[in-house]
Length: 454
Image 1 (cartoon, rainbow, N blue to C red):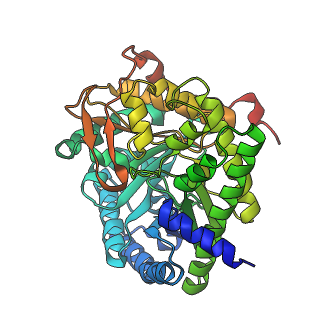
Image 2: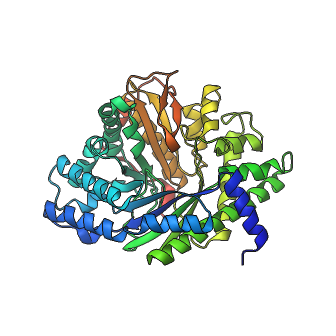
Image 3: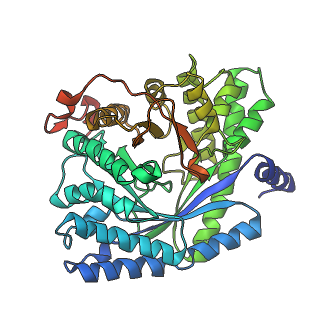
């Protein structure tokens, strides 16, 4: 039972500490939509999405009004489109047409974003996978709400370096295609290692093939709540620090559990997971970087940063799993640059570099996220950064990801403005030395020895 003191405490978190449900994401399987006829396929996709998600926006609004809990986004994730479109799509343009149908369906039901323009290629690429990946620049610049992801590696399979090499050029092409908007289309593309099937957060969400026909996943975020809780124990021991984070994560996850259960009941769709992620926004008081400073750092990037982030991530997960039997997705602390005011300030102060961020990704939820780099960064360098991050995920048996924005025409010292939850980002320098001979090798990097557990 939830007593009155907990209700009052939760209201305080919402009113003053930026607690919110970041997203209700409805996952929809499109496997039963598959047809070799492109027109039939497009009709099936549109009908399945709009029928399944027709009440998602209204139910989200009802829960928000009834419980007073802000629900920032209502989103949809679908089966990776490389699988759904393989029988019908004969060209890159055929896949772009499927992206447009996804976009139309998302607009029809009023959701913010739709994810699943995706390919799973950790061990190799089919013709359909490669066509979809090559179509990404056109797909993302000819739609408004479609998000794309490519899983290029896993602990079990290794890293598909052919896909990694291709994606370096695809990211460059996407940036060029959206040059007039500071290459913002790149924000809608994530490259993964060990991508989870049940992630509710964009741009990387897709509905995994291991999932049910439809499922409700909820993502909760509360960096401000954790920051406020830690202010009350400033200077205390690590034991007190950890207990405080854990208890706070427990309370935040209970909010997500409540929303997920209500959405599931009202929509008549099974509840999947609660993703407890400290996902920041540019708003004051909603920063993971500020939590790290409260733990004891002058700026993220200072010596001790990786240890502080490891502590934070671990305690968030420990608190979350006690509040819900179904914690999943990514869960932990996100460290995007553009979406976190404290991270932006750390970059400006010279405390935070891409290399330090890479070290931090060894212990955080995702990886190199929302990082703007000079527009003249080579495709090979982008592929090299992706390969490094995939290696961290592969060896450490964790999810890692890369979301880079090589802003055309921008250089170190410039800033790109994205607006809204995406914020703004200073252009970060990239190591100028070449890795082209490495990333141009064919094939894949083998799985690590500890992957063999059969």
